[in-house]
Image (cartoon, rainbow, N blue to C red; front, side, top):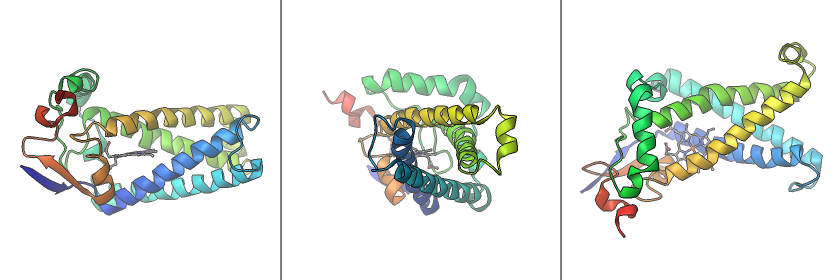
Length: 222
Ligand code: HEM
């Protein structure tokens, strides 16, 4: 039997899609800014920079709202995102083994999501790295590139403008790699869209036995 649970509150959904749209825009405009001789999607170089800066500002503001919401309104930041000692020593390996091997045999997902424990150990580690480390770093490095004169001291401290540009680019590459893996893993629910729907409507549909029963896993059906 199927039932639904309210998994993702509206502020998180608004943040997520604003952020996703912003990051994709930053990636595409960034590609033109970095490789203008090969990529010309937005007409002029100036137009790409203007759009890049606007998307960066939107991502920064939405990040601040996400942080305030999770920390002060919902108060669930550490509960949902911080991996436990068990997650680090066993959970991430169990989950990786599921994604690389057990999933293809139609075996059940070792993690069962609930509103209080939404993320499996691998998601916790990946999301924590991305959201608590990489996103703030890309925001600070981006603003330093936008406002070089006022940020002069910080830029000199980290080794100059070249180091700053390279770091910003390297972090952006990590984001792009994350995005491909993130979207692929998000399709591994009991149906390919099972994890996308709650990110849109808030409600997740699941079986009584848990979401990934072998009977409804596409890998088991042929
Ligand atoms: C086109 C781009 C994207 C798509 C289609 C997408 C899709 C999804 C889906 C389906 C989920 C729910 C399933 C899950 O938790 O894994 C999700 C959650 C999440 N995504 Fe994305 N995503 C995108 C971009 C991003 C980006 C750029 C970031 C971070 C920089 C990100 C960070 C997250 C986080 C932190 C969650 C968990 C949110 C929560 O429930 O608190 N996503 N995403």
